[in-house]
Length: 561
Image (cartoon, rainbow, N blue to C red; front, side, top):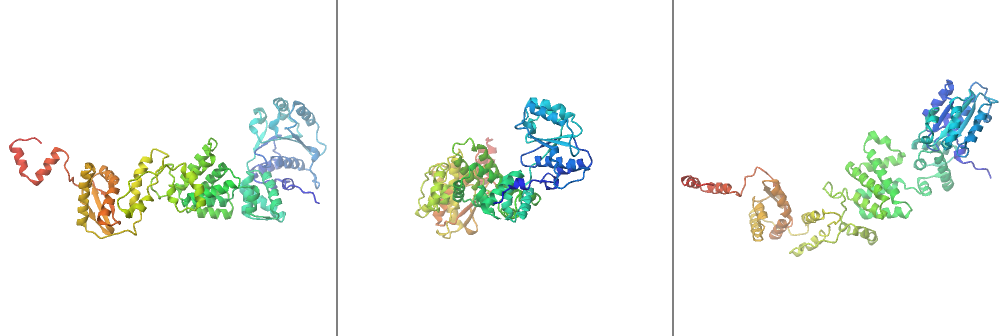
């Protein structure tokens, strides 16, 4: 059985050209060697697995190759000394090192000392190393490598030429994995390699380790499904499907999909963070100028562009805010699953009823989903009970034909906030939005309409609702096409009051005319002449219009207004 070598060792860079994602640094080092302009103390800093130690070894080898006849497989091992500062961090270890530095190399021009994890040196070891680092012998070069530059004392930093290694980009890592697949005769889907590169989080060594693990699982054919199953990550499809449900206001489907995700072992926190990132990517895909910011494969990019056309920018901005709020509150929540479910229901309710203004935490009422299957209801009902108040009692209508219609519209008052009182009033307005296609629509004339209107005014006065009666009597209603009744008021205040009382007036007219297609459209026209007098002067002017002799009578007797 042939000995297996892990990819991280097998494909470790042997030349600067092989180093992934650090082109600026490798070019700088190559030019420095070529021009004999290399500092004697270098500090390589950056995240793990990005090529710091590999670059140090390549540099150590390249330095001694200058001006020397190169022998095949010559690695100048006797000129390169590696010290692990994590286990050799005492003053004695550094003193031993400084004693070795004085001895010139046997072959080659330089002795190179690579000190890995240099931040682990003790304070006294750093101090013992200062003088040697500042004035090393001409044949000695020090390369320090660390992942935590902030732990190195400033006096050491000031004596080094610092190279900051960056995280390796997803696309760079994916392209390198493609090269390895070609060398190993492995077929891999583009999305599969992309997921591996994303999971590595900028570390090429981690990407190669994950690659070996996935190949062991699925053989020489890497698919997106196999990679997501083996790495236990949420693939793009989970977020695409969830977003489709959220955009179509399907709360039961959203809850079911989230339950499936939890059943696979994923945390709600991980999911809501991923969903926020998905919304961000959709926002990026809305503009051609920012599409390049999508670090995804070609197949996934097409899906993002397609779904971005369905999601509006206001929806995405609100959804990102709600997902971020959930993320901030997750750790402190005692019922974390419910917190995520409430956030998802609020996101699913953003586009409900179009652009109609809704409370900040509005959730579609449970009665909207009456046609749910029993299985869906079992999940939806317990959650809805935590946010939907008990049904509000509404006075039943007198006409039997309207009873089943009203019953579907009355149980919708949320008790989450003080706005429930306002929402309860709004429920009465939903009556006029019901479907009356199968109800009577008898013809009637404008004269009959005005008689019904006047009768309603008298009814209001008998009930003591004189203010509403005065508003309704302000103008004469006009009948237009399709049983549309238009009514004009002279100011905004009267318009608001009329709208509040409109549902009752509409019910009265429909019953009287036996026509359930009647609608009332109120218009605001502040130039309309007042029909009623309220002050003594207005009353006198009204009387004077009917009988001009009253003015002469007032003048004859010198009466006041």
